[in-house]
Length: 347
Image (tube, rainbow, N blue to C red):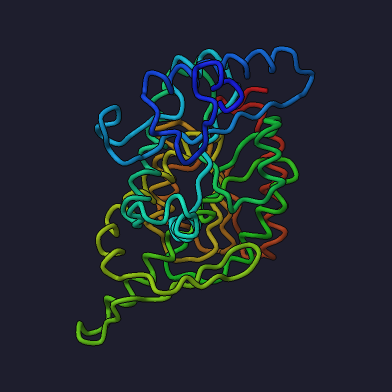
C-alpha cells in the first residue's frame, strides 16, 4: 500500500497515520495495491505466493469508522486474488497481550483479554463467512504454536489434514500425544487444538477462584508450556480474566469444532480409561455434523462406553493392552491405507 499510495495523493503512508486517512481514499489505495499484487502473482514462477494482512482492525471510532472496525479485505478483493487457501493465523491471548503491550502504537489502546478474545473470534467468523461458498477456497484456523514444518505442509497442501483429539482436563503431561503427532506428521498435517494455550488461563483462574474470597490475589501469574519452553505471564488482573472467562471457554469449544470442519478426518488419542467431555463432543461432531472419518487409539483391554463406540466404525478402533507405540504404528498404517477413500479427501 505504501508503494501505490503516492498515486492517490498520500506520499507518506505509515502504520501510525493509516487510519487518519478518509475511508474512501484508503479503500482506493488498498484496491490499487491488490491489483498490483495480482499482477505480480500472474507474472511469478513461484510455487507458492503468500499475501499477509490482518483480517480486521479495531481503531478509535471517528467520522469514517463509527464502529471502529475495519476489515482487512473484502469478499470482492478475495475473489480477485483467487486464493487456494485462506489461513487464519492466531495465537493464544496471553502471548498476543504481551506483544501488543510492548508495541508503542497499541499499548495505550485499551488492550484487555476481553477485547483480544472478541477481536480474534470476529476475525475467524469473518473468514468463515467468506468461505461458506466452497467454490471460493479452503480455509483453516492455524495456530502459531504449531511446528514450522506443519506450517510448510499447510502451504504445500499435499497431505490430508487430521484433527487430533485427546483428553486435556486434569492432564499435565502429553508426551505420548506429542510422539504420536510426530509419527503422523510424516504423512499427514496434524492440527493440535492444544496449540492454543487459552486452557491455561482457565486452569489458573479456576485454581484462584477455588480459594476463599479473602485469600484471592488481585493479580495472578500464569505459566504456559510452549514447544520452546515454559513462559510465565505475571501480573495478570484476575478481574480482567473474570470479565472474559465465559468468552474464552465458549471460544475453545467453537474453535475446536471449526478446526474439525476444516480437516479431513479426526484421530482420537484416548490415553486414559476415563471419559472426556471434550473428546466425546468432538467425536459426535465429526461423525454426525461433518461426516468425517474417525479413528481411535485406545491402549486398554476394556472396551469404551457403548455410547462412544456407537459413533466409531469398529475397524477404525485400534485398541488392546499392548505397547502403546505398537498401537500407534497400527493406526498410522490404517490411516495410510484408508485416506484415499475418504469422502472428505481430494488430491
